[in-house]
Image (cartoon, rainbow, N blue to C red; front, top):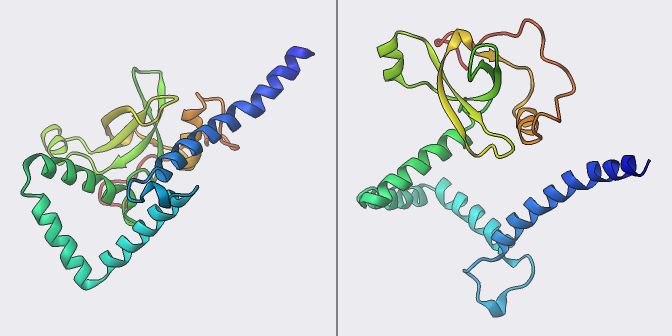
Length: 204
């Protein structure tokens, strides 16, 4: 009975503690803003400043003159060798992830990997490599297979489109499944005859 109670307590506190720990890291990172003098700081000031900076930058970027200034600053950064590579790659990633029309990380998929008979849960990561498609003659799709329990690392694959199975679960459910080591599964199982990805001419 005692063992049962301990396990029940762990089921409550482990996910709650992990959530609070991550939120604490994020809060401390935002609240330790170096833009404010120490004498002006109070609990939460860094979070408020970060939100204000993000909002103000968005207002400037949406303005015509502000957009021109940001374009000029971007051209300046693109002339600095190392900065150009870092900024360009990061910007492309941000545009892919945050664009409303982007297809990146909008679908949870299933592919037979790392060998035949074993299936891995992944995410549609965007458009495939055009060169890979042309040289192989295979209609491919880019799939990201995250590691567990840390989904920030993983493997990028060019998989044949007809071998990729689209799951009904949401991206949030898929991510929760991976982070929980497969313990937390979506409420409804995937259908037996799951659909495959549409042809390349269709919208993913």
